[in-house]
Image 1: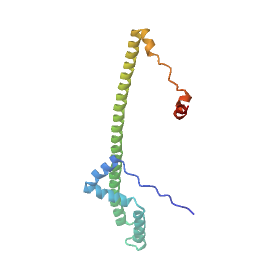
Image 2 (image 1 turned 180 degrees about the horizontal axis):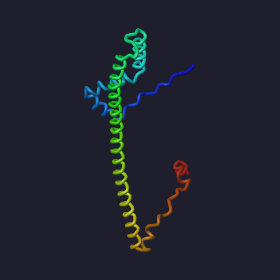
Image 3 (image 1 turned 120 degrees about the vertical axis):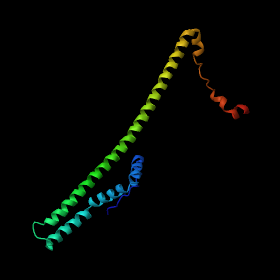
Image 4 (image 1 turned 135 degrees about the vertical axis):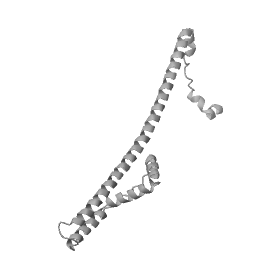
Amino acid sequence: MIQRVSYPALEPHPALARHAYERAQSVENRIADRITAWAGSMRFVYLHLAWFGCWIGFAVEKYPFGLLTMIVSLEAIFLSTFVMISQNRADARRQALADQQWQTVAEEDRQNQELLDLSHQILELTQAIHSMAAQVGPAASTWQQPSAPFVADPESRRCDDHHQQ
């Protein structure tokens, strides 16, 4: 038996959500979006197949179907306009994403430059410390050497045994 896998809904990209909100503020954009959604559906295709079939089958007009040709031509003119509107909408979405990505890249560049500046400061401080240590001379090298670490006698860890003896 085949089981369907459901995935959690993805949150929209903030730049695209902002773009969709701004686009929805215009009545013309909402109308154009609905028309392109309808014209790009299979229902639209089925409706036209039925319409053309009935027009020709019921002999609404005689061949060469001048009125049908004119209606379909006008529809094609308007639909091509809506297709261009849809392409402009897609371009605006891509531009909104590109602008957001550019802001992210610019912020990352600024952070990288800040990290490089901090690294250079650390390098300069390290070089200054080494320079000062070299100027103090060999007398300072004795106090720079770490002493041997303290190792406790394993017998001294047993407090109870030590006190009982």
